[in-house]
Image 1 (tube, rainbow, N blue to C red):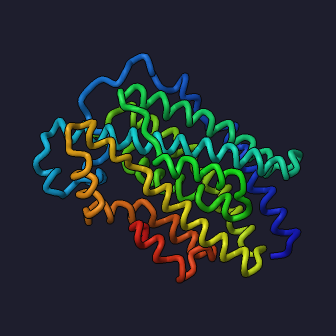
Image 2 (image 1 turned 30 degrees about the horizontal axis):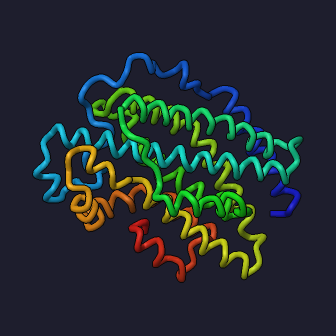
Length: 298
């Protein structure tokens, strides 16, 4: 593909995404009945996707505790998601700052910023409705992210974003049509899945476009830092405080979750599609695979 034809494809994709955004977007303020509150004792994620499923601790938990754990874990995932989407907004603003706002790709980046702003508010309202505390990444990751969001460019800007978006997207897709999951959570997930599909398409094309432009040294740096940032995001999805919130011993439950083969498989399942794409795009060389493997992403 020539540089010119590649530019044309990028423009056409951005125009399609802009058209889709205009025709198929939600307003969580209007499309979710927040005044109804979070009523009913229903699970918020499939039990087999919770971090303790299959452990001795899980077997000893009451049905009410299991439902409560699913609620706290999905609140933790949403809290981590909104934190990373705040980072993404800053990355996209900087991306547009160095681009040409007259072009469709930059205009789509601005459109995505609007989508992500609504998603952040939607996640925050959902966490509040569930009565969950403010979760988020460990403090050291929270502050280390300042460096990432200030310096990331090229594939390093978009690849970890894909990991954050596509892993949570796979979990959300598994719940949005499941009648056993709380209806508010299903609606939040449905909105996010529909709109994130456009964001994923945009980010995938940017990774595919930018990676071949890197020299050997910069590519290796992008590959390593992408792995480290991606693992930090995955490790932050379930805050250990969720266990104390449902009456469990936090340290014992965290140990059980970290050793849980079922939870390891859930992580691999969540990461499967995005890791296959990043590998194909040249972002997962053999020498960084142990980083992902240790986090049970491959």
